[in-house]
Length: 428
Image 1 (spheres, helix red, strand yellow):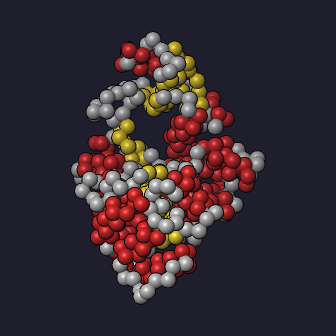
Image 2 (cartoon, helix red, strand yellow):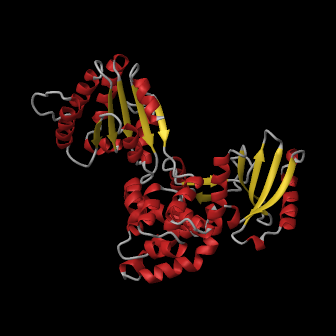
Image 3 (cartoon, one colour):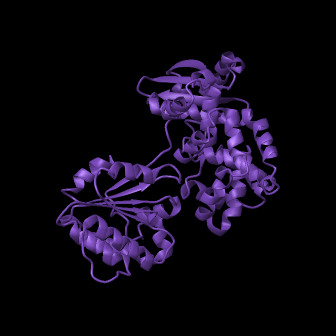
């Protein structure tokens, strides 16, 4: 897609925004896509604007072969040079960590908008901006009051590796891997490229070795949640962390989270879902979104694991008791990974394009719960699944009983053909 956009930019300028959570591989993806031709690259680090311009000016001289007089101190002057030069030849310009201009000079966004509006119709510029701080990138390009709103011609969101890719990666390093190893890799990384790479480079191909790799003195994994989210949340990170920890520990209802945190959490939950995209308010499948019959879940597997087993035990890290952290995690892992297995099959089915809708269902009293209800609207079929790590614990007769409670609540769906099945480790 990135190369196709580049080809189109040779007749009409393109402005593409690439987003995705940190460590998912956005920068490597862009560099790999653009490596077959020279391109300008600017990493917006936390320097002064003058220092950034000095590096960009050197890059312009090196890549474009231009002779620039003097030393630029404003980004907008160099951006205009690039845009003007792209009127005579195709140029790809990649700006990484674009949101950092908020800290360096927020007026950059206005000046870029003016230059783009004035000149892009006559240029052959392939402008790619990339950012990891979801809240700020959303503000730049989705807030109507921001100067760059509506300027981008494309938006690419980079997701973690699909389940099929995780299988291929693990098979490359450990051809005789077990599905328990695969589930551990999924549960601890969520398919995020950096974390997968760290475990594979560390020779952690089995569940036991993954635990040993994560819970050790020099593990980068232990500080990762703090490194990513403190920047996202700012000075209120403590409250957000308490909420995420409560959800990861199984306190998923609003009242449970409020009691755990000890303060009203409504505004924080709304921001975690709408601005940060870290949690979602989950309602039973086919229920109205406005229903109060809901729970909250952390969508990112890495953060679910980190808040459950790392954040709650950081005091042990300070005491250098990594062995105790590991023992606690291994003790509770099997129960914890059962929910991760449900999420794994959802991602697997999404990749296989088998259904038009899928999610869990439960009744108001919590007496009947179905792990996965999958709807094929085209074929008029509903598939009910019970998900357990151990297939011996699957009870299809009980699943059929629960389905009657489901149809009592959703009578309009009784005409669908139905099937019942279990999903466990061998089905991964």
